[in-house]
Each structure stands twice: as structure tokens, then as C-alpha cells.
Length: 276
Length: 276
Image (cartoon, rainbow over all chains, first blue to last red):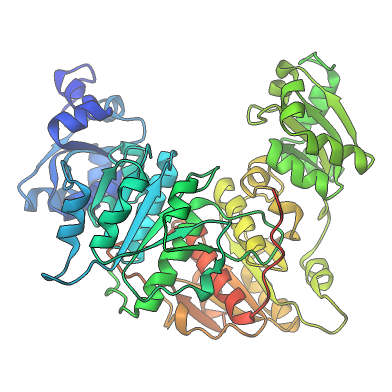
């Protein structure tokens, strides 16, 4: 059992709490049973550190780690807490499946077959809050998106808090970083995507938007919305109707409605629901 | 200018941070410029306490308070912080528009005309997190719901954190507390509502659900979902399709999709968008 919260190993793991440590190694710090489980099921956990109690509560996580040739370590509550206060008894060093990926890599990898266009992409511009960022990755995953792009000074998608808020969806959909949206538009269109901005100023109401084509949705900052450049550079600007007196929806709700509207118009079959 | 963070007035306001203080007085503690603005526009603010800086940043809040015969006080940052750490320079003592309301009051008041049935009700069963609870009030407001019911040990809807997370939507839609859902079903049906449960076990997919009738949606606990009693007592159990590998959506996302699906089938016109 690992027990020393001041050990070199704790220091090494904690380097992954900061972006340079992640960028240097291509590894992630993953916190909590839910995100650790999704990372383990994706075969990406190198080292799992868990208290005896959490290993007993979530035996499937340790089993999935061992099945993919990862290492599972029993650790004391003090050890795990020294790594992360948000661990709920379980943290892991995980290989980042999207380390070093560019937008071009993401667009190329998402095509199910050569020549077939990408179906659904979510682009986040200046989305700053890690909790929001993770939640929208989860929404994109649930709606069957092929790629998520964090553009123009958005939160770092590799941050532990983002991955935790994504409930493990980070490991299901490629997530890449990009610069300003203006520099992305041509690349998205060259991949066969129609660019649709979600903005309260939109002239098209969501229920009337044409979304059966491959679509890249643009979502803006939590407080300010999209930049003028992103709005004017889009093929359409779509607004979500407000039926009551609320001024707006928050980012995660808006993104969920838009991405599900696309999913519904694409007439895909839902995935087989997983048993818990 | 009010400056004494140890004053009796601070102590009086702080009593509203706890439920007995709110239930005894029928008043609320409202934190932050956004929620204070919505309370003021609804004519409900009795006393506003704001730093000179926040009054200058949000002059419309002070103006709305005075226009509705409330009092606006300049207060030092220390005073405001002593009342609430989440104030962003502005807090208010506010009359609770739904104080003492029962479910029957809510159902009766929502009828636009005698004999006309209520259109859309959201019922939350054992929703525990105040941030989630507030977010779903916002979703219900945006989707044009007529009533929100916090049933069966849900978070207290009058808590400052709920009202803040609702972005002021608490003042737009009646919000009432209730006991277990089983005891509510007959009352909802007697008001002409069809009861639809949102649950991953549902046999009907959201896109195929019949929602043009007046509907009461049931949403369950963040982790466990609805109780068996709520599911089996409903007229239909509807699930949200998952197109990717996500296990589920979170409560706020799920409620937003369900309530907007109802709004869309009711073919209402969106409200006139408010200018900011």
C-alpha cells in the first residue's frame, strides 16, 4: 500500500495538475471513480491509485485497468488526497488519447470512411469555465458528435476539472485545441461542414434551422457569447427560442439543445444503451 | 453609507440565509446583480444593499428598486461581504412571491383563464444540489413552464444558492414545495395534466413522445434518477436517446431537452426577446 503523501511519486503525479506537466508528457491526471472508469474502459490508464474502500466500491475500474495492462495501486486516503482533493478515493495517470492532435488530425480521424464527411462538430470559442467546458464535452458525446474543438483561449480541455466534469466523455470523442475561430472556418468548410453559430442575435430559430447536412456548431463565451467575427463568418446564426421570461439559457443547456437538434435531423439510431 | 459588518441589520439579513428565517418572514436573501435585478423588476425588493461600485455598474437595479417603492442603501464592501460571500457587491431582502403557496395554489394561479388547463409543469423529486435546482428553474422558465414543484426532499427552492443559480427565473415562474410524488399524481391529473417521467429506463424515446397535451414532467435525483413509485405512477416513461458513448446527460441538460420538446410540440410563439 502506498502511504507517503510526501513521496516523489506524489510529486510526479501532481505535475499533471498543471498544463506544462501534461503537455510535456502527453499524460493526464484523472480524478474520481466515474472518469477513471471511462479512462480504464478506453484502455488508457497507466497507473491507478485507489483507496481499499474505493477499490471495493468500484471493482470494475481496477479490473479494467489490469485488463489493459495498466497498474493498479492500493493507496492510503492521505496519499490519494495529497494528489487531488477531488479524487473521491481514486485518481489515475492516464495517457491522453488526443495528445499532440491538431484540428486537421481530428477532422481526418473522424471520417468513418475515406471521402465520407464528418457529421457533427462542436466548436467552443473562449469558453472559460472548466466545469462548463467539461459539461459541453459530455453533451457533444451524448449527441453523437465526431469532434470537439476548444478554440481561441477556451479553458484547457486537458485540465483535471474539465475531464471530471465531462464524466469521462473526454475519452469518447476527440477533443483538440485551436486558435481563433476566424482561422478555422475555411478548414471546417473544406471538410464538408456547414458552419452554424448559436447566438441570441440569430435570425433563424432553432426549430427551423436546416441541420441535416454535416454541421460545425459554434458556441461562445458564457457571458459575452460569440465574437462578431465568429457570427459574421458563419453560414447561419441560430437562436434558441425563449418561451418564458428567462433572459437566456446557460452554455451547457444551449449546446445540448443545438447538438440534439442536429442529432435528431441526422436521423441516426441511438447507441445501444449501456448497462450500468 | 452602511459600513458596520457587525450591526444588528447584518444579523437580521443573515437570518434569511437559513430556511427557518425565510419561512418565518416570507422573505428571501437574494445575492448578486443578476438575481437582484430580476427581483427588482418583479417589484419584490424591500431593501437593496450595494457597494457604490456595483450601483454604478448596474444602475438599472437601484432604479427598479426605487420605482417599486423599495429602499436602496449604499453599503461598504465589508458590509455586503458580511451578509454574503457570493454577493458580487449586491444583496437584497426580497419578498418571496410564492411564500406559503401550496401545489393547489400553484396549479390554480397558473391557469390563464377559468377552466383552461395548465400547460407545462416541471416536478423535481429528490433533486438535492442547489446549483442544479436553480439551473432547472431557469430551464423551466425558458421553456415557458407554468409551475415548478420541488417534491420529496428536494433542495429548498428558497435557498440563496438556488435563486442565484436560477439567474432570477425564480421570480418568473411559481415555485412550490411538495411531499412525495405518489401523493401528487392525482392532483396533477385532476388539473388536466398528463404525467410523464423522464428516466433512462423509459420505453418511449423523447423524439416520439406525445407532448402536445398539458404535461407534468417528473425529473429525479441527480445520481439515482426517479423512484420506482414515480416511474410506475406516470402515464409514460420517456428516455433521452444517447447517440454517442456517454452514459447519460446531467439533470439540467435532460430537463432542458424534455421541457423544450414540450414547448416545441405546444407550438407556442417564443416570448418577445428582451433587450439587455
